[in-house]
Structures are given as C-alpha cells and as structure tokens.
Image 1 (tube, rainbow, N blue to C red):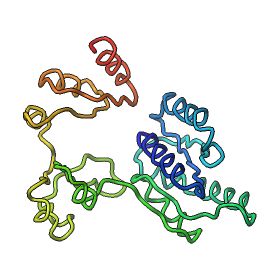
Image 2 (cartoon, rainbow, N blue to C red; image 1 turned 135 degrees about the vertical axis):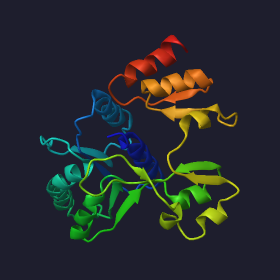
Image 3 (spheres, rainbow, N blue to C red; image 1 turned 90 degrees about the horizontal axis):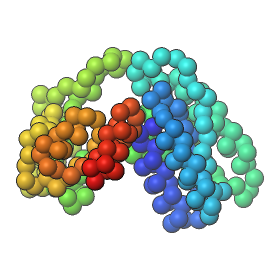
Length: 238
C-alpha cells in the first residue's frame, strides 16, 4: 500500500528506541500493488539485521474479488487479520514472549478496529489531523473534504461549513499560521512565490505543473507511468 513505507519507517524508529518492543506488519495486497513494495520489504529485512527478530512481515491471503471500494475490501480481510493475530498470540504464549499491546491501523483500515476489540486491545489510527497541524509549529494549508457516502464510489465534495468537522476553536487558534479550505486551487498555490517545492506521485499533470511554474518536485512514484515520469525528471533532466 502507499502508506506501507512510512509505516515501516516509523516502526523501525520505535524499535530502535525501545528494545522491549516487537512489531509485526500485516500486508494486505491491493490490485495496484507493484514489485517496488516487495523489493522495499526485502531490503528492510536484509538491512535491519539487528531488528530482524523484532520486525516481521506477514502477507495475508490475496483477495481475488473485484475492488469496488476500499471499505468493502478491508471488511473482507477482517477474518484474515483476526486469524493472523490469533496465530501470533498463540505462538508467543510463553512467559518471556511479548504480549499483544494493540493494533496500529492505516487510516483506511478502520474496519480492523473490530478485530482489536475482539482481542481486548486498543487500536491506534495514524493520520494527519487537526491536533497534529496545530502543534506542528509550521504554516499549513489544509484541504478538508467530505467523503462519499458509505458504500458508494464517488469523488469527495466540499463541506458547506468546514467548522462542523473541526475541533472547537481550531480556526481561531491557528488563524495566524494556517488556512482551511475545500478543494485546493493547485495551480494558484504552485504559482505563489512562498512555495519552495512539493511531493508528488508524478502523474503527468503534476509533472507539467512543476515544469510550468518552476517549482521543484520530490518524486514519490507508485504505479503506472509514474515510475517513467520520475525517472525522466530525476535521471534524464536532473
């Protein structure tokens, strides 16, 4: 998944700071997944010898159903996740084995909260929320959009009043450092002299916008033509 790399890097940091921790990463293979992800996992396993016995990866059975939406995809994986967690707890039942402390979930994997509840452990969801932006100490532009109705595949829409989903007093406390908007006017933002660069998956539109406005781009290709575009930008054009 697109968030797998960042999640694993956070896991490595946690393990280096506390030798009592052990982390198991459960991998749900998406249709959009490519060999780069597997190569990354293998490189982590090869290079992190000091952490290899405390950082493990488990590939869950592949779901062959058509990917209509992410919510149904993750719900179908709940039995697989529950079985994997059960095996982990059973294999580490000795006195000296680490106990199951909780499940750390990607923000798309909220159905797995039920699995954590079944095992009587807390679940933690990592995402960029209002508190993070407020306490980060950096200026920000936050695009807040309304998700599509449950079970429907549709594009996000704007809130009529963003205040209804923001913490009380957030806008007032961050008025001097940030701005909350709906759909971000990307071209206008890139054209602003305050922008020093941006991170992109390197779709062709983003590449053209970077070139047109003369703004540096940090490449983060995921799939499709993005790998080619990133190679052209970094290797060929420099």
